[in-house]
Length: 399
Image 1 (cartoon, rainbow, N blue to C red):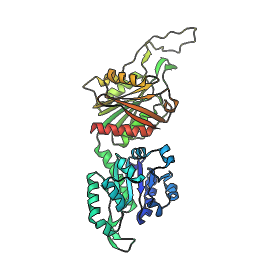
Image 2: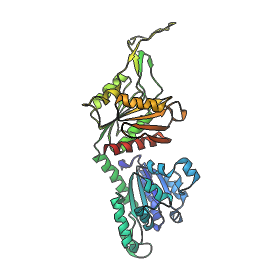
Image 3: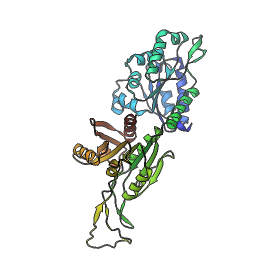
Image 4: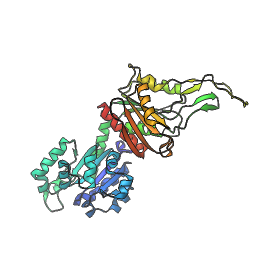
């Protein structure tokens, strides 16, 4: 099940005898390299323990809506945004009713209602409860909200009765999730270009002008785009980072090489220019190593402005062009100026003077400046999560 590899799934376990099957779901997902976070409801904890879940998922279990510890680490909004999809298994009649009617009195219902991701539910309940008119009405309502139903099955129940309401088997549930990601990838033909990392502008064969860009944010954006089914090309300056084979990685050194690689990768639906491209290059590069002298004068000339060029050539321009602005002061002023000067659609800006979110950090905090709408702020979090949120916004824009 390669389509599950490195996917992020939020599993919500509700109260019911079928909750024990959730442990097998976790085992199967982990076997397929899925990253799992789990919410255990109060009634769910009557059937399975947090210790069992943690042991299998290798991550903490979220239980309390108003936990100080959880809020400090990840609030319910962030938790809902973190996942590629949400799976509720078992989904009880009570939880189904809450979601259908917009009630959010616990962490599970609050996270689900706050989510903008695909939601799968695996119902499990007594046959009479499943056949009740109110349950049927709630299920019908959830389907109109684009919830995906897995099961239930017909069979013998723990209560001794026989009929429809039995939760689908874990292997069947996992297969449904795998098919979802498979179809997402197959059906989404959108093409994306991402530039990342620094450029090197050579002075002589052994010396060059460069910058401190690590490329981490650009690489994470490329990964997020690929996970969402984009045919993704990553054009990278010199870094030590890696990506999987689903991404077309093109390695370059200079701004001119990055420019040519970008042109050769067009057309595309979206282009994200996160690379820190050198503004200047040496006008005349020495073919031999320059020997030490008391004074060395280098004449510089402007490099090609890749973002500006692509943004202003209608025959080449992607539907969505996004630039980055790494600033040390007057962030909003400089970002807005760049947005207007380059004629791009968005500018994603951050304050690189803040070491917590600087070039080599694994965390970031950004402002997204739009040409025709209000500025958005993505608060401090891992660059991978920033990337997932940015890609969700890209998809919403293109659709």
